[in-house]
Length: 236
Length: 339
Image (cartoon, rainbow over all chains, first blue to last red; front, side, top):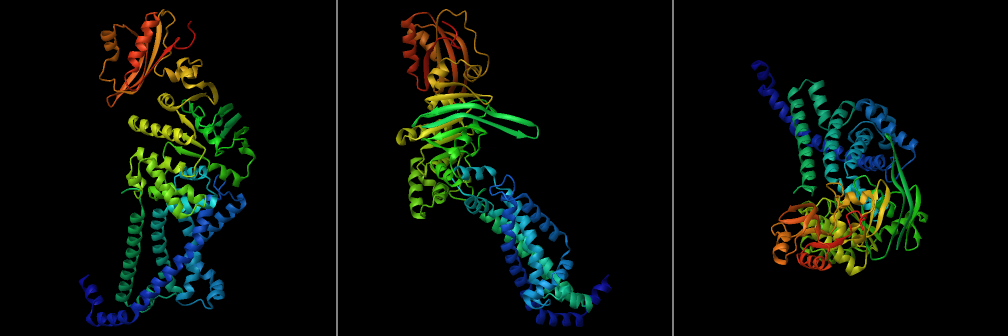
């Protein structure tokens, strides 16, 4: 045990790791944060309206859609959610190439990340909106609100705290996927952990990358939870 | 003028179908305060939701000022709903908006500019006595205050009709009284037609001019409040007027009967019946009583038996009416069948 510890933290290894950390990590952190945030934003742009449709489009919803359309939507979302991320990433290579021009590198991972994340965001949005007190929707209808007004002025504003805490869940999940993408040419902390730690046996680098990933997850989760609590006007 | 004609509505559920409304017809005059009273499950909520077509009746029509609501497009119906607003048992305020913004809500829906909406909302908050709470959130207010905000919100678009769906059922008796006072005051000031849905007789007695008793989806009885409550004819009406027992049997009583309704009278500590005996020498027998004291105030009612003498009856009515919160009237029998 002590031997393994001493070997891991041998002075020459520590020095070498420190050099790599200094030269590689700032860029890697930036890539991870940038890919995660951008992918989350795109996923929300697509997933949020879909989540709204999942609730309002139901038979008894405020804006009923044809049953076949709702069914198709649900099937597509479930399908995308059941494909493991790495497989999905390979499957969307043609699309990635068409949009970004390449399948390797930081930008290229945004495409599979968004495709993996938007169905998840849609489901999270759906669950947030379902928490809205149906009496409030009836109230808005009794005051002459149109379906769009109900969505924009009642359903979404009333579920902001829940949406924010779900956004924190989404962003941490996407961060995990982005690290995973390092194995198939994605950039960031995941790539460093795999390239140095897995392929070149530099355990210290891997540990450092993992610790940084943990710190990032903690940061996003805490910030999201704080924002959610702070925005909620119900219990003060 | 609201004309409800032959309204029927059946709900189909997994456990079978429920006939919520059966051939209900009512006429409600402009400026009236009209009570619709019934036990739970009598169809009150369905009926009130048919008045603004939140619930579509299977048969029958609702006509407001000559316009048949069933004939309107969705957009036209939304316009009508700005003039037929509603308050609820659970207040239903938007919890993430301040009180001011809650009152602004129907104005926003109607496309009123923000500045105008806020000005109107402030005026209304003042009307309901809550101008100091404009920037508070609903969760910071008591139930009574929340209902006041809801009333201000319901009045924002200058409606002609206010629907109150069990609006005081979640409130304590004192708060209930103050909310009912407020509704009455608004009715007198603006001439708004108020439709009050309730299961509490005291609410109807306090503010309504006309009442319809709903039982099993049907109108069991309707008319002026004093009329219906002093001579309940139908079973449902009797159940409501004498809630805790069957209507008292007074068939062998030979004298005159007075019904006394305590509606928050300071009478719990004052023995008004005994005092009437000692001060005026009027000995009354208690034929029926169902009263309770809540917070030192008396609620409920009593039937007194008096000797068959006009002067005694007049004196007793005069004496008892002096106490605040007591309504006295002579009844010809508890079910209208005597005499």
